[in-house]
Amino acid sequence: MTSDPVATDFDPALKLARFLPRTVITRQTAGLLRRLTGLGALVPPKGGEVVRCDANVSVRVFRPTAPEIPRPGVLFIHGGGYLIGSAAMGDGMCRNIAAQLGAVAASVEYRLAPHHPYPAPLEDCYRALRWLADQPDVDSSRIAVVGESAGGGLAAALTLLAKERGEVLPAFQLLSYPMLDDRTTKRTDLDESRFRVWSPRSNRYGWSAYLGSSITDVPPLAAPARYEDLTGLPPTWIGVGTNDLFYDEDVSYAKRLIDAGVPCTLFEVPGAYHGFDQIEARSTPARDYRREQLKALAAVLST
Image (cartoon, rainbow, N blue to C red):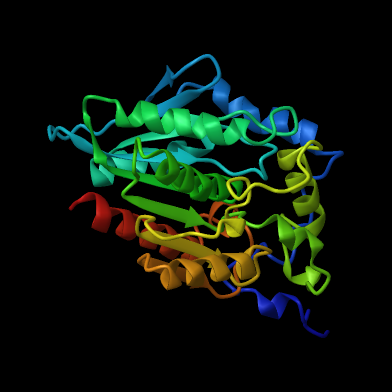
C-alpha cells in the first residue's frame, strides 16, 4: 500500500487532516451552519455573563477573581468566514485569559454577512471595544484585541479603525490565521489539495458576502491587507499553519508590519491546516499554539 502524498504534508500529530473535507462553508451550507453555530449563543456562559452594549451588539464577559483594579482587557472576535459563528466560540479562551492573566475578557456578538455586510460587523466590534474601554475595572491603555480567521481580519481592521479614530488605542493585537486579503480569491496558483475546512471556494463566497454587491472598490478597512500605512499600530502576534489558505497573505502582512516599524511576531506551524487548534485541540501542535498565544498576551498585559 502506498502512502498518501498529500497526507505527508501535514504534521503527523494532526491525525484528522487526511479525513477532513477541503470545503465546509458554501452558499448552500452557510444557512444551516449559521443556525447550528448560533446555538451556543443561547447557552449562558459558564463563569461569565452576557452584557448588551447597544441594540445590535452584546458581549460575553469573563472577569477574574483577582483583586487588582484596574485590570487589563481582552476583546475576542470569533471566526466563521464573516458568515457563521457566535461569541460563544470564545468562551474557552476568554475564561482562560481571565483566570490565568487576570484580564477582563469579552467575546463580541457581531452581526454576520450576507445580511449584514461591511461595515456593520466592523462597527459592531468597535462598539464592543468602546464598551470594554469604558468599564471601570478595565485599564483602557492595556487592551488587547484577539481574533481568529475572519475574526482575525476584523481584529486587524478594528486596530486600524481605532488608530484612525483615536478614541481607544489597543496595546496589542493577536491575529490567529487572519482572513486579511480579498485578492486571494483571484489566485489561480494554489494547490487546493493542501487545504482543509476553508477552501478557495469558501473564500470566494465569504468575501463576496462580506463585501456585498454595492462595493466596487474594496475599502482598506474591509480587507486590511490593502491598507497602505501600517505605521503606529501596536505590537502584533500572527499565527498561521503552512497548509492554511491564508498562509501567504498572513506572512506578507507580518513582513509589512515589521517594515513599518511595528514589533511583530510571526508564529508558523509547519503542516497545520486552517482551524487545527480548534478541531484537534488536544494535539501537541494545538497545545503549543495556545501556549504561545497566552505567553504573548501575558508579556504585554502584565506591563
